[in-house]
Image 1: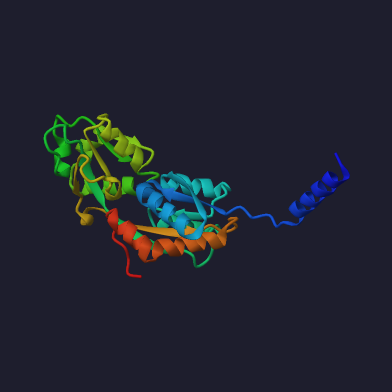
Image 2: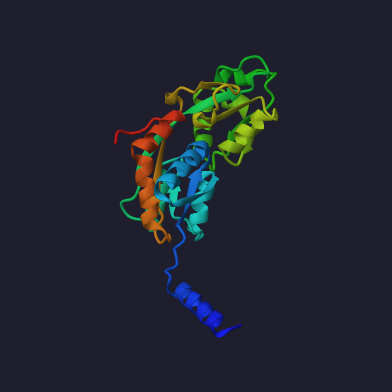
Length: 253
């Protein structure tokens, strides 16, 4: 290599060394209740386009997500399907004080396939002999599973329907059981019901405790400021618009 070439190479590498390295965009880890999968996938995409912050979602039953956080999982934000779980994390000192907010109220529906047994339009229809299996999310892990049990008890059909129940890990899995024909009906979140697929009816809200849902920033998470920013986005007008489009009721701002 000639002296001129060596000098040029040295100058090039000196330039590279002096050039500032562009920091990678932060990645936000968010644990999210399964009923929010479609809504949060849309919210995450819109938020990333606006902020440049990538959002990585971990979907599951609220109880299971809370257990992961209690065991030290690296989570920045929990978007739960109830209010009790964020409150419990606060009491344990695992949540950022003052970050807990109710963001929505969900609705429970009774869903069945169009090509299944004769129309299932009421909880009492689940007692019919041609209805062999009914899916619900595990009431021990899922607030929607708890609501399903409460609604069946309020309808006076719990004892008859209980032997038919097929518990799922979360509401997404419960709906999959029904969509694939493994069960005749499912009690599931309204937010997961896609327009034009299957048939569903709202379960009267007075038949179970309100499905108020809250979020909370996890204390000690690596991206607390980004988590607060995403929480504000979800609670703001754009987040409210998306949540309402999936059938949630949202509190006044």
